[in-house]
Image (cartoon, rainbow, N blue to C red):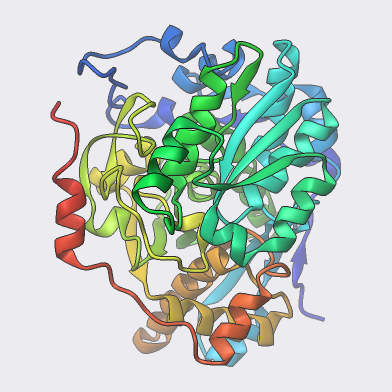
Length: 449
């Protein structure tokens, strides 16, 4: 019988997070304040607990995972590494394809890997309430779950188009005790301003971040939690890649290509950064970040300083960006509709240690359906981008007659995304390559630093 599932014992779950900063060839670019000068950690203390700020600026290679956090992560971790034998056969490829399945978490995605430690550190700091944003709803569900576990109230600003497309994720957040509001909302100054300008504004992650940050800054007892982009978020997600490395050791294999979808960058960072650390130590591996062609941050954005939110409440980070006031179309991969990207992922793409590829929406759903028919799991629309990237790599192996090992992270299941699949099957979904003139217009508003 073919081995399809590679498991680790609970005792083999990582005890430390891996920090890529320790192995980067050049130090991370500084974070800037509104005046264009570098800021210190104190500038973040209004919305983050000290422990997370320390992780955000740390250059230590290994950071211990608190035992209480490990106990909760052990409810679903280590997640399985699967060999996609049926998909390989369907493609007729000589490549070996593996995927790490993060849909086994209670929220159905990789997001609780960082939601749990963020809630833990906020509880330790005496915080009683968190605000956050969410796109597709997976992060909102995860922080709602974690907040419930640590006795913290959670308010979620959900991008309006996803709020309408994905009502069951809303229900999950409410089941775990969170308040959920469509963004832009009437609850914040920035939300009211945007609705006054455009009552039909579909929302964006940048705008939802502005609303959540505004609320947190206005209340000393409230902190802000971010589900992607920042260094400490990618750090927490490193459990994905660390586990995968151990699992590959068990079967005597190692990937030639590592693939993950990329929006803000946390899933990609968690998957790829541990392998990038091994690459720094001499192992050869290709790292591929896959994004939507309708929100082509890494492939068509500019590498420049920009705000992480739409209204300029956040510090300036150097990243690939489409402009902080960029509003992407309402594609169903809501978790990838972000104008910027992780500063660390962006810098490593800029230094050509990571490759990036943009794929149209219809191609990703075609890949997701093919994967589901072969492997049985229906992927989330975001995860379909990784599936599509892995299939493209496998077909290239077929064309070239080369046997390679391809590894990707299946970041979540699509059980609450079936309306998107319905629209795909009925022909209602379309491709959308964002017009160059619209990107240039958004980029013209970049801060002058």
